[in-house]
Image 1 (cartoon, rainbow, N blue to C red):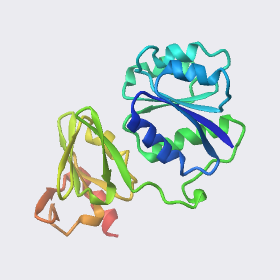
Image 2 (cartoon, one colour):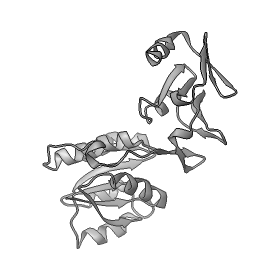
Image 3 (cartoon, rainbow, N blue to C red):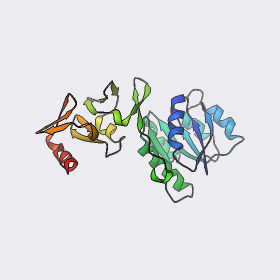
Image 4 (cartoon, helix red, strand yellow):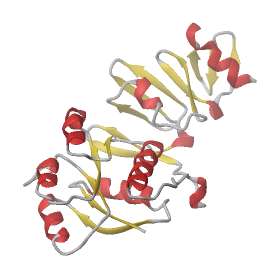
Length: 233
């Protein structure tokens, strides 16, 4: 059993990480800490094998906290700030996850931690006898919004932003479409244009260089016709 600790000042981050960890049969949550000082107090009296660590916290920043530990356990960083990645790997962290991260990316990080912990066998979603999460958290306007993947019709690029379109709302995410697509299972979302990716299950019809999803018409880019050809096979 791998005992883990979550250190993050955002309640929703704790919920996301625990939700993902609950899919692993050999991960056990030991404590939720909402700042680094609370974590130091807990670790003075308890041992853990793995820490999920946020960086931008009040009182004491994540890496400042990590440097106070004489023999730190395995650490997976979970943060919205990509600029500290090099510093993290210099401190021998296991992985560096950028919020919002998908379950598939989280799974890769945890498997790496399990392997480094002396357990060579990795865990797959099927091995847990539970289904992978059917939803994803998207960061929009400084908050995380949970969206059911099956409800997403398509994604539209808008400069450095992306618009995630569902039947009842449009969520604007500050992320390029190429990066955002990677957060979804490859069988669910396919890119059909430099500015569009669609949910295959919601395609009503395909005609010439256009895809119809309900009343919406999505163009098919020349470079992406192969994606459609593979889908139609």
